[in-house]
Image (tube, rainbow, N blue to C red; front, side, top):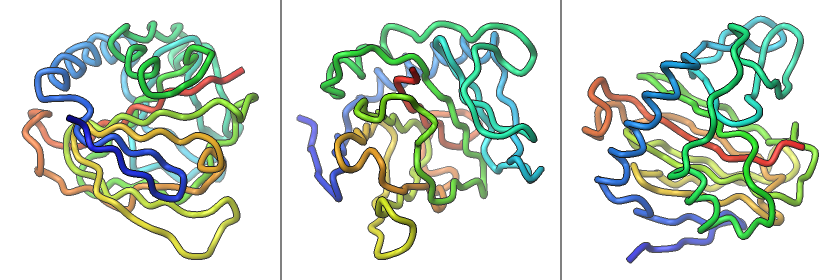
Length: 201
């Protein structure tokens, strides 16, 4: 049975996906990434991010010299592939949302990659949650506050864990300080994949 933790309004479903479900999900992601390859985005200031990104759904999230935004096309000009039903089923089960996700952002963390504290605020409807799925190596997830600064809490997310950021937690800062590279055998070359499902419009 999945353990459910509540921290700062974040709802953490421990071990939501078993190993076979994780493997099936990775297989479906390979098909997505064949159509929409991972790219290394840069910040508006021109600094390369340490994660590599892609997406599925009607929209993907883009960061480049023009700023942060959602777009309907991969940077190479092709439309994003559809979100697999297996991923939609996770959203349907845990989100409590009345709308379907329009974007599944795919972040790949290699050795040394991290994601600084940030808010997800490029979406039009902030009443809709963000659902995060962890696959592969463990990641140290930091949870902060709505305002930048103040105390934070951290928890190691393992492969198969699912986090729901809704309600007050929807506007909270959060990030990934580091990964334990090689801690999981799910991905043949190591690393961590993080999927985040969002309603964009």
